[in-house]
Length: 155
Image (cartoon, rainbow, N blue to C red; front, side):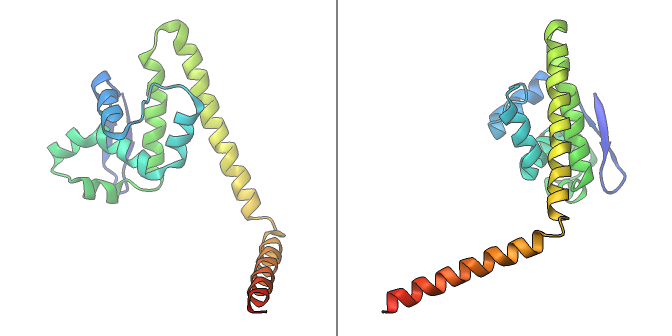
């Protein structure tokens, strides 16, 4: 079991049980125990899916606290949802026997490293001094092409 804090400094527990995995599979059509890269990529790239997974894992605790899904969603955005998914991913290896647990731990770690590298590459690309010039050049070319096509159709 792990935990994370929301934007209101409340601590939420995440206990990845067989029942929780089944609820997530049934409700969201994603299998947290599917170790293919696409599962990790989908979880890492789809913020709403991440939130839905976290909500399903915290739903009972939220009900006990009198917190609705909407209130939970308002408090679990940004770093908290990312932290929560980190807790979920760290819990996945616990489902497997010792021999496979090591492999699953490695897969989860590699997925995390790849996500961090992708984020760093994206940041570097967005901060590239030539990016604005490249975008403007591409826009100019696209606009000129559209104008030429429109004028050709008028002829």
